[in-house]
Amino acid sequence: MMNWDDPLTPVTQTVTAPPSAAGVESVADDAVPTASIQQPQQADLRPVNPDDKRVINGMTDINQLAPFKYPWAWEYFLNANRNHWTPLDISMAQDVHDYHHKLTLEERHVYENVLSYLTTSDILAMRNIGLAVMEKMSAPELQIYQARQVYEESLHTWTYQHCIETIGLNQGEIYNRYRVVPEINGKIQIANRRLNSVLRADIDLRDRDELHNFLLAYIFFAGVFEGCWFYNGFSPIFALQRRGLMKGTAEQLQYIMRDEVLHASFGIRVAKQIMLEEDIRPDPRSLDEMWAECEAAEEAYAGYILRDPILGYSKEDHVDQYRFIANRRARNLGLAEPYPGAEPTLSWLDEQANLRKEKNFFETRVTEYQAGGLKWE
Ligand SMILES: [Fe+2]
Ligand SMILES: [Fe+2]
Image (cartoon, rainbow, N blue to C red):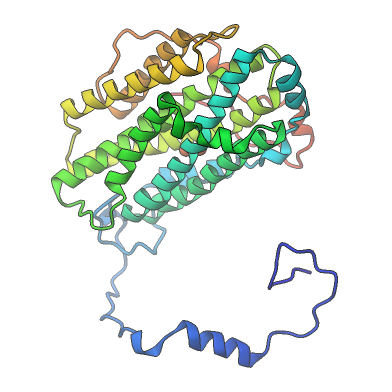
């Protein structure tokens, strides 16, 4: 039986006395100060017309889920719920041995700094969706998928922490690297600046300048931060996995990547819907600045984590693949390609990142993994 007063501590004694009615009344009295109760407004009793819903700036009842205006958003939610996992499902035993006995110094440098970047990034991703984006949505089917996304971002943070803890890395050092290494800090600062610009409570999205800034932030987070930096960010670990190293971590990242592909795809769809409904396009100069800034930050980051290339993976591979993926995201958004002519350098990435059902992981699961192969576009 759960101890309701201290739910994390196992109960050794059976609790026999239910909470007293007097106690409940007392809590209720404290929680609802009568002086502040507001009189209800005159109710609008007309039914909601789903055609009136809008992604932002809508006036329909936010508490009514269906009929849907955006049935695709509900499909994303159903799909996300097929990717159930926790970091405890995947064995890390071999990774502990690999890290301490097989990885070179250069490979350890890559492994540690990729984790350093990812831990901070996923907290930013969680705060962006949960604190800045969700409250501005005016259709509940969008918010419900985003609520799942908030949970997934925290699950990802747990995963990195699980890897860091299991391998036995110095947490104070790993978690502070984004603050003390300028090449990691550069990417984090860009995301922080975008997030802080839309985190204010007084934003009026009927103001065209505010709307434009919100749209740009949305495009950045979905198209670059999740669509490129996460997608591409896992690949150095997948390169180790291809050589039989750090396979537990890589499998964890495969599950995260599966979530992130959905996040980026959903975000891009929302951004396109905002452009359509609000009749707005991102200013080309602002976009050019965004792509230039993001490319420079990615180059600096790759130069730091891969200052000495590791077997099968180099700084050039990383940056060229970023440019190739960025073009894909821009096309998805209906925007011009920022890096025309970029070629993929990691031809194995999509295949490597896909989960395969024959993995031992599935033998431990009660239900078979329901989703099919990932569609990377
Ligand atoms: Fe994430
Ligand atoms: Fe995400």
